[in-house]
Image (cartoon, rainbow, N blue to C red):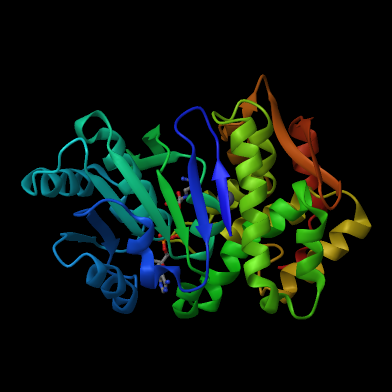
Length: 339
Ligand SMILES: NC(=O)c1ccc[n+]([C@@H]2O[C@H](COP(=O)([O-])OP(=O)(O)OC[C@H]3O[C@@H](n4cnc5c(N)ncnc54)[C@H](O)[C@@H]3O)[C@@H](O)[C@H]2O)c1
Ligand SMILES: [Zn+2]
């Protein structure tokens, strides 16, 4: 399946096909691309790409969020210079969101911007981070605060690579698809309600890509509609910050964040059933006042109120402004028995 993405810059394709990593070279015109991956991406997938470009260097960064920092960016840029990459050369990112964000930003900076191709290998990066053109590193303890909008020239998605991903990482990525189903695509949400949702993985990825593509095409710089994709994220980010030491993954916090805001009782029960099926947490322990403060400090806070994404039926998300009392009430209503 091929999907064209048309944003402000040059249009590009997303190709979703089982086994495409094995013949990625057929889709890539660059002869000596510069390859970037991380040491948590199984050797099997890295070798599969390297074998197709035997003369290309592959820069392997340490796995984990800790690699989204200046020192690693500097090492990647230095390696690109040492290999004499010119403005006409291409970078290929093979990995999850960390590799994608760092490689995209390195490509945006190098020689004022060179082409990059993204080959996402985690569920989250397939359905979410690989399209939309946001690239970044973390700085001074603030996530994604130094970056650029830089679109890839091609995205290749091979669901086969998910076979090596842990169930926990698979499920946390799917939380983003559940979110997109609730805000934009009823059928996508209903796929998760069927017992054999695992059989529909390619359709889940395709439908999620269509949602994300539609939103970024209409709102490349996140001024309006893209905010709907923040469903579950305002409280989700607060839970992420509150629980240090990475106790919960991003998608797990989004799952809990969706449960906190959703008001329609019948829909909440449907969401609960889906999240349980995906072994995602519904609620966690927290100090209500600490979460209220974190939610208000979230970048979406404006003039004392916070923009919250709400939904009352699958496929239909909309924005609301919540004041401090509404934030507190939602937190107090969260059922501790669910934690
Ligand atoms: N740019 C955006 O729009 C956007 C959107 C959402 C998230 N993000 C960013 O994405 C990052 C998170 O991405 P992620 O969840 O993909 O995490 P990740 O890139 O850290 O990958 C998770 C782990 O899985 C390993 N891995 C990758 N592919 C694998 C495979 N096929 N089999 C087994 N293991 C594999 C990685 O080595 C890593 O250890 C965060 O930094 C976040 O800020 C960016
Ligand atoms: Zn997210």
